[in-house]
Image (tube, rainbow, N blue to C red):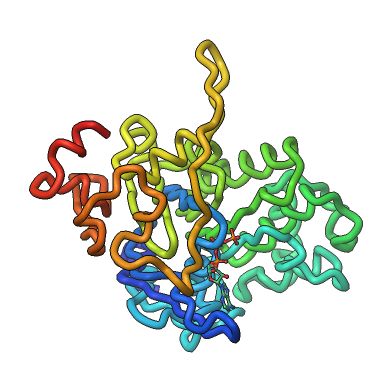
Length: 325
Ligand SMILES: Nc1ncnc2c1ncn2[C@@H]1O[C@H](COP(=O)(O)OP(=O)(O)OP(=O)(O)O)[C@@H](O)[C@H]1O
């Protein structure tokens, strides 16, 4: 890897189209640009089916974009260029929702961790590295001799994280890493991931449908709706002043407790099928502010440190509506 190139993950105008029997062409990702820098946690949120996992798969080369580019540290990430055993060189590792997706149930934890340890380490240094990895995820050294089914869901996810760390990645793509876990394991795994990213100065794309969780941990939040990023901003700003009606709806759907409790406001309507996406702004059929210009796809406007794809932010088209938001 070129050491002068920042280990940044960049999606530029990425599109992913599936062809499926019955549904025809499914444009699951419809023109996404996004960056994750070292030392940064970027949260990607959106409802089920909006294309989050597809984007994650493209990031690590498990799926190919049908258009656009994905680059890591200045080099294209493509399925052709992707060699699964070259994690240390590629520098990107994925943590899945289901730890069984990354752990082989028939092999001991130790042998699976050894697989990922860079080949430059030899002999006893390899075994020492396995123990260090287990320690990093707060698991005892004895876990190395055991099999995945001998652990609880939360422990398995911690072991899957150790497996992801073995090749010494600089960037983690975590796709709903705590969705399948109970509340206390969720907190443990989230704290572990955030601690690791901070300690090791890695970058992380943290994918979740849980906006409140992303609010807790992400430096930047990107909101995805039906294959597009509709808003991306520093998390605190996004939460304080959402500029896209969909972001506002997601925030309003988070129950508030404390001195002024608030019941969640449920966003009306279902997410449309990307195989049959609305023309123009894809959020238009569910948007309480939709007006004539929304028949065209809104451009993504850079508002200085944050970006929004909504005609309401365009003062030429909707100054009065924008003020009322
Ligand atoms: N292999 C595939 N073939 C056809 N369509 C697919 C395939 N994988 C995903 N899709 C479709 O692409 C769209 C985006 O799916 P994706 O799994 O990326 O969304 P998601 O936001 O991660 O949802 P979830 O949180 O439910 O996993 C959905 O409409 C899904 O049905």
